[in-house]
Length: 61
Image 1: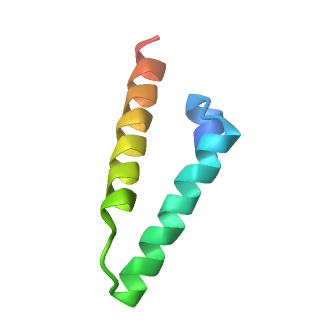
Image 2: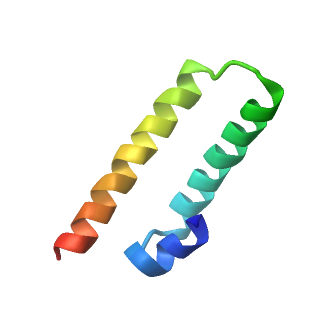
């Protein structure tokens, strides 16, 4: 799904790479049962809010 974002909402390549890294980290944590760090949680929330803003802006204009 992430790979479609550059075509659907104009997400730049660097942001796509960052979101994919966060996804991979989340998956690894899901399988290992490790705790999620505060820094990773904060970054994931920041990126999600930014992505939501980009999607809203794309569909408004």
